[in-house]
Length: 128
Image 1 (cartoon, rainbow, N blue to C red):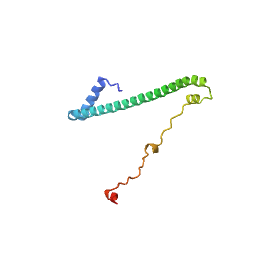
Image 2 (cartoon, helix red, strand yellow):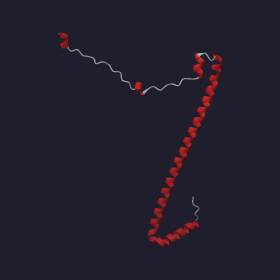
Image 3 (cartoon, rainbow, N blue to C red):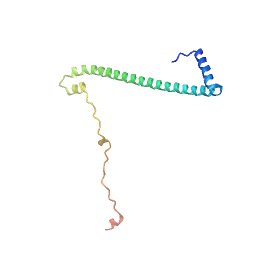
Image 4 (cartoon, one colour):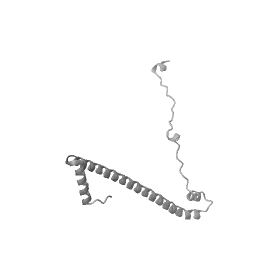
């Protein structure tokens, strides 16, 4: 980051001692140290977040590549079966072009079956 050697630090300390004096220099040095530490932690956190995002993007890219590879292999495996069965066979059509499973609608999943109310007969009704 910065290329500061011992000589530069010594010059900064002497200038700080002259400008701030011996009473305020330790407080100023402590404050600067806290700021530097906070800045390093913030930068480290940002770097780790960026590295994590890059890792996730790489994994997503690899998943897409593997999915494409698997799709190609599956198509290669389907080809001999569709040729052997012939183009007129319904089985060959289902092998060569698999049907996508249609998602069920929300109404079917959340449907409530209504039952008619049951009338309870009381003993008074049985007497009549």
